[in-house]
Length: 305
Image (cartoon, rainbow, N blue to C red; front, side, top):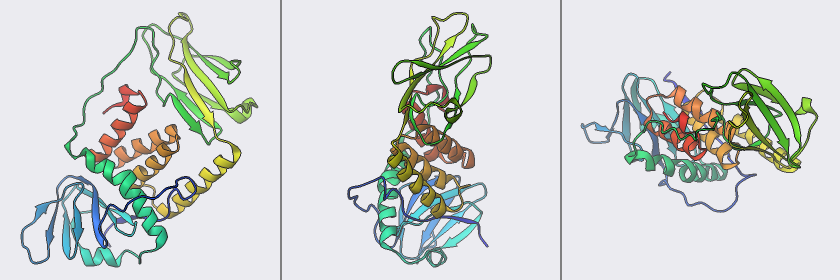
């Protein structure tokens, strides 16, 4: 059986509100991303045309996936899936693989087509640019988003090494500007378990300091925690989303997760999901551009690919 990864379900009903206009036509497939050589032909035609991001396919058609190629699509009922094995896929077979539309599917489709599809489609004319590293003389650049909300108690803080530094001081400050954790480290990462520290503030600041030259340091970075009710609502949505996605080892699924995390300012989670999407589908330009747009928006210019 051809390898096809399905993404189904309801996203952000707890978190998002407001109405969104459906981008796709009824009973149509919208192309979210293409990598390699992917072509299609319509019923009654013998000509194969290159499939592009943003194309919409309706009626009877066939999609041909060449070796080392990829297509990510979403159906108008909210079902998203990937074609990543060589072969010819007929529209009839694709539709038979998709269950009947539901109201929740429509809402899911509206979210994906507005939150994800339009952004990906807009990358068609963009180029993947190299990193532009902007550093001030005394900066120690960090390796995670400088501002993020947390759901987990364990956070891995990271930063980039600087030539003049053998040891670093990691400093964690609470909302009352009181230092609650201070440690000298030689590595460029440190894992902090907030539960073990027995601190429960709503926000924290953190920075990295050159141990021998304290005038050299990172910018001040921020960690925020949700209220208990908001955290539970988001965790519930993530749990449902993971159940609906099923196969998370798919690049398109990771893009959807990343968009969810980013929308809710879970920027560390979003970074991990975007990275995974690029790793799983390295030939897909649209995913790499989405990743680059995100890291640039976080000021993490070193990470641009």
